[in-house]
Image (cartoon, rainbow, N blue to C red; front, side, top):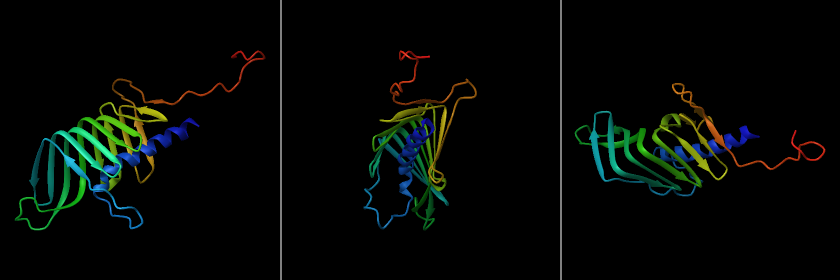
Length: 188
């Protein structure tokens, strides 16, 4: 029972975290229209290259989109570039990598993830949380040294810290007394 509960908590978070990668995804004609993804920050630097564009957001970074809000201190977005190489930035293609650092918080549908760093790799449907990652919702909390969330596989891996011996931790709501005990109801 605990394994399935743990899996449900992490699978739900995976859908939250990979929601950021929806910047890349094709629109499903049966789905309701998605809200625009809006990124705000104190500063933004754009660097156009021949093959890719890089966006550096610093200070009070906030990403909001369809049923999702994420905040952090710094965010770097690397996207493929298309169009004329004469233009400074060129046309933005598929997003290859999003790196969020410093006080990362990702919230959606009653779930919340916090970490010092989040790497979102849309082409692999993968999110990697490090630096004290914690995922919580009304049904429990999961923490560890590193979390890898794999959308396409509906899988989450939570690792302890081999350097310090730190272990993974799952906190679930308490179980009711199942009535197992001795004749007088005493615990064995």
